[in-house]
Structure formats: structure tokens, C-alpha cells
Image (cartoon, rainbow, N blue to C red):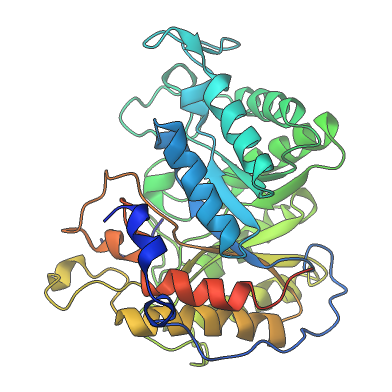
Length: 382
């Protein structure tokens, strides 16, 4: 989760008054969206990123999912870290530390999401130690891409008919998410293997290209997403993904601000879409992988404000406004994953990233939660 630049308990909620529950809620009303003919653009657009694989207590997983469902959100995007699942060596799925099958936690996660009527997007990345010679960088690609292909096959087959959307890697246009330097040709090769193996395991699987971090750099360590995607197409990646994932951070700018190549804002995603169209790939949908505004307090040190900052009121209003704008104006946009629902407590309030949350670690909702709930529940039956 990056822009690619150098870088009270739930019981209280039930007692909130109606006025408090609507605090910060956007007053916009959603008009019926235009007819959507591009595959993967219809249905409930509201989604959210979760970290349920870090959660230990089952009741916290269920409470998270219930609050997500009750807010009218239909999707969760959840990491399935390869390093946690296929250990301690290739073909083995056994956690030696806890003496249990590694799939158990993820099987339980999928089952809980199903019980709450939520669809799952599985993010697949982070190779185990045995698969990479570089032991310092957990996001380093595997030495043998076919090992990742095998993991994709196993995962897609295991959840066939239950989980059918799979994100292949994360932000490879940042050196920190690859080998220390960007390499679109290498990622294109990995994507082809993953796509081919996923479709062989389940022809109905939907493959999402890795989201690209928004940035203004020109390489070689980090490369802006527009140039990276252009090079990815040049490397022959077009046939090997069904949906393009995009990061759509608003920074400190309103969702109505037009895009510019030298500016990071919400509508910058239109420039990414232009790259797709130039490569005759306009028939594919774009989903938003990480979306939102950061509501750090005014006292946050400037060096931490990677995503800039807005007020909580602006965060609530602009989050809803951006989704409604995308549904109204961009027929190529599908599901939109807000960054993020809730952390488990490993990121504290001294860090700027903490202030993307929709609810606190103790499940107390923020204004953005109520604003999204009001907008997302206003229209059912997507």
C-alpha cells in the first residue's frame, strides 16, 4: 500500500444516537448508474480491504464481517500470503510453529465471508523463504516463477466456486515490491504463468493484474504507474488479465479535480485508463484496489504525510462522492475497495496509515463508516 514516493468497543455503537450515526455522512444521493456493458462492471461496487488473516479471535472476524455487510459493502479484498500457506517447503502446508494445517485459517476466513454474504478477492504474493534466494525482502519474486504458478493452481482449485477473483502480486512498479528495481518484462512473465495456471484450475477464475502504486518517478527503483503499464503492454501482458486494478488515493484534493500527469489525485486513474485504451484494451474493467483519503490529525509530522491529509468530514464526504462519480461517469469502473476497514492493532495512531481506518481497532466507527453505510444501503439489489 503506497503512493510510491520516498517515503471504544462495539457495544458503544448500539447506543449512538441517530444524529451521531449520521455525523459526517455525505448528503449526495445516488442516481441510477448508466448501463454497463463492459464485463465485471455491474453489481455492488462497494468493497473494502481487510486484514482478517492477522486476527486471532473468531468473534473479531465475525464482527468485522457483520459490520461490513451491514454497511452495504459487498466485497472484501484479503491477502492470502504464499509464505504463510506453503511452508516449510514446496508442496507442504503445515505450520510447524502451531502444529496445524496452514489452510485452516484461510478456509475459516472464506467460510465466514460466505456466511455474511460477502465476496472475496484473494491477493496472492509474498513467496516463502524456500522459494526465494533473497531472504531479506519478503516481497521479492520467487527464483522459479513456476513455483508461484503451482501455488496459484492449488489455491484456485481449492476455492473453486467459492473464491473466483485473484489479484496477482502487488505494486510491482515499486522496487520494494520486486527485486529492488522495477522490471515490467519479468512481471509480465509471472502474470502469464499465473493467468494460465488459474484458468486451467478453474475456467471461471477472474485474474486481476497487480495494482500499480501511484507515483511520479521515472525509475530505475520506482516507476510511475503510467509508464510501467505502457511497458507492461509492450511486454505482451494484455491477454493475461481480466481486470486492471488501480490505486486511487485522493491525497489532499477533492474527487472532482481533473487529472494531470504531474499530479497525484483521485482522477489520475483516468490517465491509467487512457494507457489501456491506447493499447486497444478498453473492453476491460478497472477496479480500484486501494481507494480513499487519509484523515491524519493536524499534529501529524509532515514527513509522515505520504498521502497528505484531509479532515474526517472531508474523508467521509469525498469517499462517497468519489464512488458515486465513478459509477455515474466512468462505465469502465467496477468494484471499489476502500483502504481500509480496520487494522488489528499492529499499526498505531502515531503512524499516518492508521487514519485511513473506517473503524477503530476496538470497532468504534469513524464518520467515513457512517457515510459509506448511508450511501451503500440506499440502493440494494445491485
